[in-house]
Image (cartoon, rainbow, N blue to C red):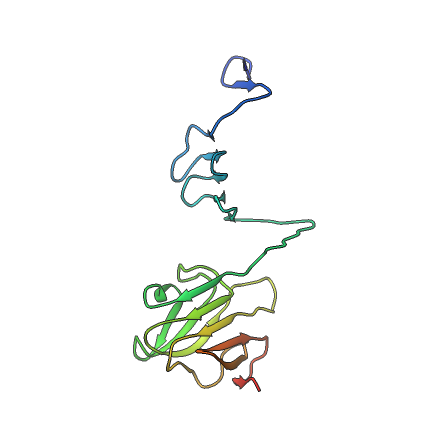
Length: 194
């Protein structure tokens, strides 16, 4: 290993060698909100602190970025859309209360993360008490087209007035123990699958 001065007059060090082994490369200011770390032992990367990183790769290979611009050819063989289960514990992050009784009244299904829940395209409703679905709030996709799937496991669920505003027709189908909903870009009455 050779250690040399990197910048004239100090301020930097260069380490060079053809077989350097280490576990973690970490900036001197690394903490919860600043600095960077590459952990070669578990395969994790954090830029912008350990929690709330602006760019991170976890041990399973999941990549998160606070602002990403992906250009050129992208090949994603295993790209999946997030599936969330909404229950009594986390419902405040995915169900926006609109009117009526706080438990059984009208609520919007929030897919876009605006209630501090995850952004998703597939949602399962598994609450202990049924309520009325008033509307669906989907994430902005940069297009007029967006769709979300809702799987309902909760009994006694109802739909507002059979019309979901402003842009989504819901398709309803009984299956096993629940109901499957799908979205389209039309504003029409609730139509059962044949």
